[in-house]
Length: 439
Image 1 (cartoon, rainbow, N blue to C red):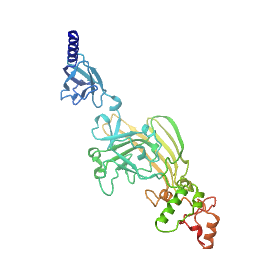
Image 2: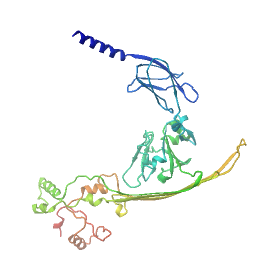
Image 3: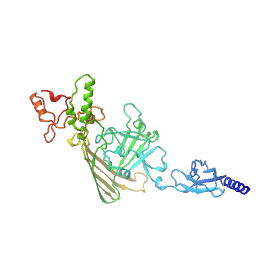
Image 4: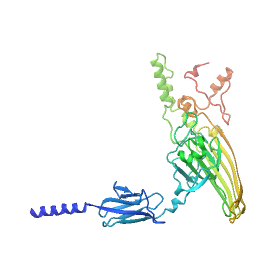
């Protein structure tokens, strides 16, 4: 028993010794000039223990032996250091050139990301390639923090609401759009997403101050593609797809509808509309949702561009075609979106003389874009006035096409025939139950 107690005592004492903390001091320096770094995060891996460096880049931290320190700082590569003794640490961080060399658009110029302190988000052309949107705003969804992008409806080519700094005014909360240095009105729906090199979003007041009161709701800076030095290159991208509804509302079929209508009539003290034989023979009737949807609605996108240049001149030319049919009304040309776009730009270096102190470089250029879009739409975002709202409330006992008795009744009473489809079949219009007894 005494040996067991001695073993437990020694075991607990060993755990206590190893769980004791030691005080570690150190300094964090920049690798390019050994200058001290202020505000570097020094944390113990796997815990919430940590400090930041002071003005001299120094820190003091109490940590367990054999623990791992994680040293991280914006613009520098993170390091991990294992605490093996109490000697002072000298940590040198190297620049993360991939991050620091990234160039972002700021106001009327460009700067390296390493010197930008304002709140700026950037989306590059590589990220734009991962999606195939009809509008630029749609591809920014989920890629820019703090920005809300909401499409107003499912209509092909429908506008999107972009809210960078929330709803700032009652009448208009849209941001200011700048395309290649020029302010544009009415949004950027005319742009072909394939022509865009990058999109910068200026979110805070400091970064947008250069544009004045117009930038109260934020600024969206769009830079289009241009040519580069090298041989002429031709790129052609094409995509073709089909669209289908993924869900339908659950509604009553014809038999269930007849039963409910009879119950309503009886509860109101009237005779039922339908006999039991009619109910038994009704079946499922017409699924108006199924008849309304356009299955396998096509969507296609064609993009071709030519670019190249020399040391003195560069050029870029692109042509785009986008066509989308809606899954409701697209097969009757009632809900479609079609866009043609052409964009070209070029620069020419007139002369360059670095020996001069002024007017040592003169360049001329052009940037021309043309877009033509055609959009047809139906009623949207309405509970009862839209096509989908009507499809949910249509009488399932009414067939899609009118029968001979219906057409004869209309002709006898000089009633104009309802709409006809392309095959000249007459569409029926739902009438109240009991129509068959009239005339």
